Length: 513
Image 1 (cartoon, rainbow, N blue to C red):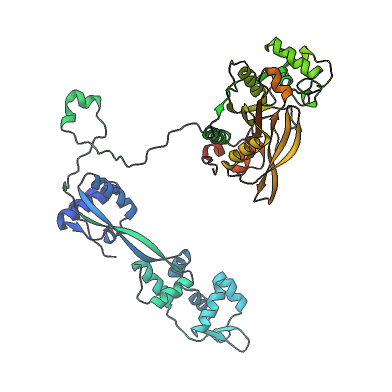
Image 2: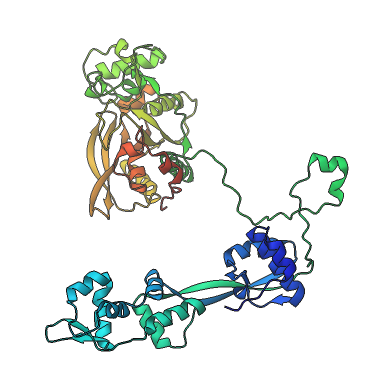
């Protein structure tokens, strides 16, 4: 390395200054004297090479004030590996083996050399044999074949360490194969004076203080330029849960399809809207305490239209609209029980009743995405509360074909093109279909939702015209979210086991539409 000494004034100032101040003084002195610095890689202070990364900070500060300009010079140099440094300091593997072999004809056992030299003995022994430094006597012991050696490998490595280069390309290739050296890109800088060059650096103010305004000092002050390209500090903030991200993506899909969102801010619902209005009998197993959460205080509510209630009671007890009903004694006190809603269809039933009360029927497309509650046994795929997605379309003359078409359009926007439908049973839809999609990863059809057409026993008591049909479908939010974010246990997504760091770092949800 070529040493460029700092002028006496810079050297005396560097004695008490910080490293950056030393670099600044050195650079400004050289520019003042020579007008330019061709390569900062040659700079030293007191025999120590200038740290180029530390120097870059100084150059950026001076460049921002137009005191100097600089260009980056990138050179590829040879550097020693950790093993190469060891060889340069203590000698090559073959030299260490030679030194372990004593003078004279008696020689030394190979195993003893391995103990003395260590892991380097195996390679060093072969290299020493090849260089004809050692051999074996009649007893099979290692003996010296020469009295002195020149450890050229150590000499070459010291040269490479000092200069970063060597004139023998074949040697460099061989040393790299031995993992003693490697290439490394190093950045140095070419410096020139800037339009505002000076050797006297005035401290710049970063802000105007109250004292500066009062004294008028701000008029003559030099202010530091703002770096508008600098990366700002990320403020602390909250983060959207993966479920909220997936929910928002589903909402956008519904909006693209022309749907309106139903109000879902009622976690507590009467059994009337949650079950009875859906033509679900009061003896249905889903209405038992082991499947549904019932409220204890208040336990009941009679907030449902009495005339509508009587029509619901009639269709449950005696039938109507082509149905024979269930033929049981329907009880108002059972319908009045308050529950944590078990599905968002309770919202749909209320909305459809309100639609039926309008003077003139108008087709609607609604959706809802919100929380529902079931008295489930907790495991890796089930929780007592989860989110349900529901789509509802009401119009004249709708058929099962319309339902299939809407489902194909909806799931296509989720990136699911292959669908199959399987007949199923639901108390409030007929016909009913389970929705299956082809899963390329599992190479099989998997169930992804449920669907159907609301029964006349549900719609006609509401007052909807006879030619109006309603199609609907639903699925959960948790399962697609678990698939999207690679989670196998739902308790890693919701609950006390949730990793808050995962919430902060999980990516934006983007469904393949």
